Length: 75
Image 1: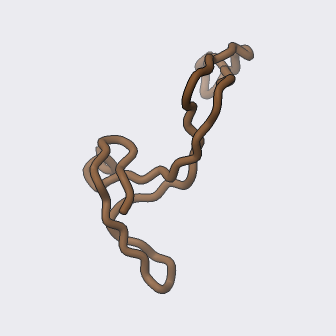
Image 2: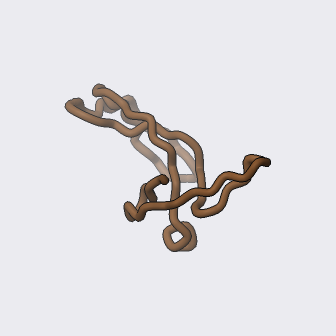
């Protein structure tokens, strides 16, 4: 059982002997900021013609698996 990171729907993932899976779309592991902390500004970068602010989270992180349900995946 996993959870869609977008809408929160519970996903029942079936894993085959060849490591294939059904029941959701997996995008890997990512870190989310948790607890107390703040974002500190590190500067700006130009990406694809747009200026974006680069920041760093000073608090703790939590590693989560990124799964999406079928509906969220196709939106």
